[in-house]
Length: 298
Image 1: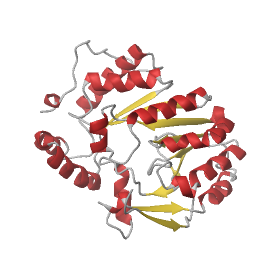
Image 2: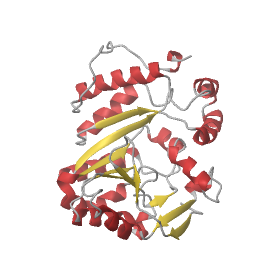
Image 3: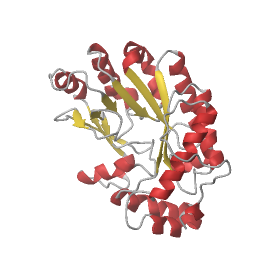
């Protein structure tokens, strides 16, 4: 990306406690991300740094050069040995910086040496470069590609510098053919933009057709600072949705429970129809003509 700045920094620690998001510990080789996704919750993390968190999140990337060495030391502690590590919970580990810095690859090599389980979250097709290390981790590694839409034009507006959706699917398929466990994160689902049944089915069916063994789904969440970035984008790019978004997210970060519940039921059904393994909660199955749309909340 033109105008991007990379700053090499030395981290004080490698691992952070992770709640329910994919494992016991999180590992982020980079801070900031050139993919520039307008909805990214990690934007807020740049507010703690001496940079403009609105724009510098996607222009100034901090590379933690000593992370692989720290990771090895921390995972050898008895209290952490064998606990799962989620890579990329706050910044894409396969964004362009990785092509030269190779910090993520070195972390994977450390994990492979220790036979330590891990989950990788990414939009980056560069991950295919590290197929050899992922094969060493085979039974202990899962790779999830974030995929919000198959609409290339919409994707360019929402995720302007991320690899195209079809390229991510090809990377997923290639890794799966090599025996790596792969899945798709269909999140965030953006109300009124990516949440029609046809759009959701297209992503889920494509994930299944390319070998995904799992599809995770989640509605858009707008934490305070992220909201300050995302809502002006909606005002500018999708003005017909502006008033509704501002009303729905006026008093919190989460989508309404009714919307999230309906989204879960619909996508559980679509996953079953498309042959994606799932373990839906017991409850009412949505009728075949159930729709997700803005009037649901309006």
